[in-house]
Length: 140
Length: 120
Image 1 (cartoon, rainbow over the protein chains, first blue to last red):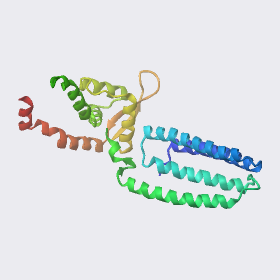
Image 2: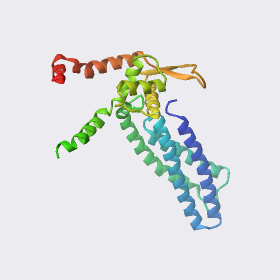
Image 3: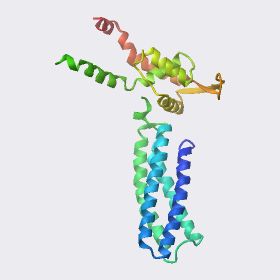
Image 4: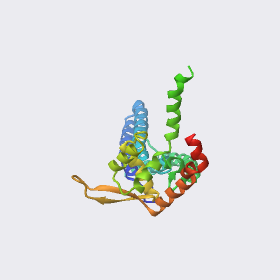
């Protein structure tokens, strides 16, 4: 378990938390002010930043020690960070008056389906690993 | 015309042949005795007569993997100057792995039949 939570994963998660908070600030502010373009822009900027975040730390993780499956571990941490922050956003009352908490639940529910599919894939690739390292990538 | 492509064919074959050899060279370097990364690199380059080139980053990456699967470990010792150096060595399992690999894949080149063919 300890070897699955690596320094790069922790750094990735911290950046994800910051990006998600910024996204929620942008989203709620835009909705409150009825700025549709800003809503779309917030989502696009958030998606691009998250992609850069994942690529950067994912590559570093692979170069350091390619523990399987980098993709799933990063996906799971994104899922947890994003949904916990989104829920807390509502708990602390930071949301716009036009936002509905059900959107968070529905998003989390749909996302869970994809996470489960990814988990099944993760279990299948784990079979071809030794101590969580891909057999084919072990010896060079 | 046919002979013109000989060097190209040779280098293409060598490129394929060398893939997967780095592990063997690292293990041989460590079988020779405890070494830090620069020494492993020097050993590989000199003993392979510069046919195997390895970047330091690549060596570190491989050593981290071998350490993770418990075939290589290290002990920190004082360097000439600067921070402590990691001196890598093969674990008991690492030695067994190398021994079995050599037995199955390398020793066959020393059989009389293959040896005679190589000398022909």
